[in-house]
Length: 587
Image (cartoon, rainbow, N blue to C red; front, side, top):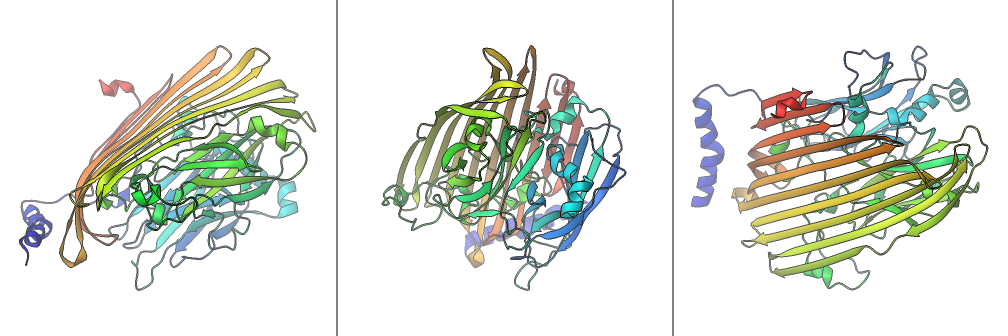
């Protein structure tokens, strides 16, 4: 046997045996954890009522439509509620791959999530999300006049799984519950929905939520998701606004798969730079690590975001993510676009079209959206107009130098767009201005005949939404988001076609929000960071053996509260898990 293989055999087999003989080994955690601010911020309060809305075992569900259940709102828990919490509890009977899942109410997506990578029978986890933002849907389902005309609402969940003889045997068992709270909330409660994107920009939930999703969702193999296969593929969805709408915000959910599952680590190859316009890529994953999620209204660009790179449980080193979840993995981010300036184009009683796309996309992305609409209850119709539309071309510079497997590539992108429009309603004539600026950089270097890879990505976004009446500023929301990512991997071929890979990771989400209304101003900051290192023996996409240590630190702070959590894991064992409601713990 080759001496290199013997060395790896000693590391992978004999060393763990020697370590085990020295003393008892801590038990591996079967519970997978998300080290973020929990939404159950109603300290000491018991839900007014809790409803189990869906219970399902996902066995061999690949290509099947979502699991669905009728929902009847309990009479003992009528609106209004202070807060509504969605709870998704899942367990895995055995080893299984990680999967993407989602929950919808009447076709409106309220949660997108990834399962962990269960490495032992009995793995389990719980996802809790503040869904008060979707109160319009829940309130509608509790309205007797609505249910009498349409019937009960439908809760749906999609989780494609396979337990066929050629796949792993694990079955996912899922329970979906809704918890309704009443009573006062703390500042932390309002901020709990701020991770991983800020929803505290909206003090009051919308009056109407329109699903921008696949209309064949109850029957189709893609559920309510639209599938995007390339950069020119735009998924259209028709919609019509009520004539008395005075505000509109589009919320987009997205996840990436197939050739774009690791888009943020894709090197930019010479074959992409030198291809003819419109030509297909001869090599997948060759167009670099830049993507932009965007929306069009009737074919006109209406805003976009660079997706936050959520790292899936099988990515980089699967042992980093057991038992801790990557940033945003359990509650994947959604992305808001304020469409209020465009109401002047939409309040004509006609059907319009929202198109969803991903710039530079490869197969494939799954997208859906919700259109949150606020209506003027004192008017049958309002007037509106678009007065400023500024969308210069996105500046993207691409450079690549490759010789065989080794080389480097760099992508720099900058963009700025501004939209301004007025709406005249019973609230007065209010002008809404939206300004967004993005700055993105991706650097990838490959050395040692493809064995060593270094990835460095950073995305910065600034967004401002300002409302004014005449020369008076009524309110302003300013948000700054920065998302740096660094990955280093070293790979060595092992016996039987396996690959031994060492990896290091640094990943962070920085978010700052300043809200002003009149003379009042509030500030909140969020820092979510993970550092990981370890090694793994991989056979194809499946982990054979490995180890990993991950340090997670989470800090949320606003004018009144501070929440800190540190969670360190090593070898599947929780080493440190501390939580503090006070920033004094930093001292």
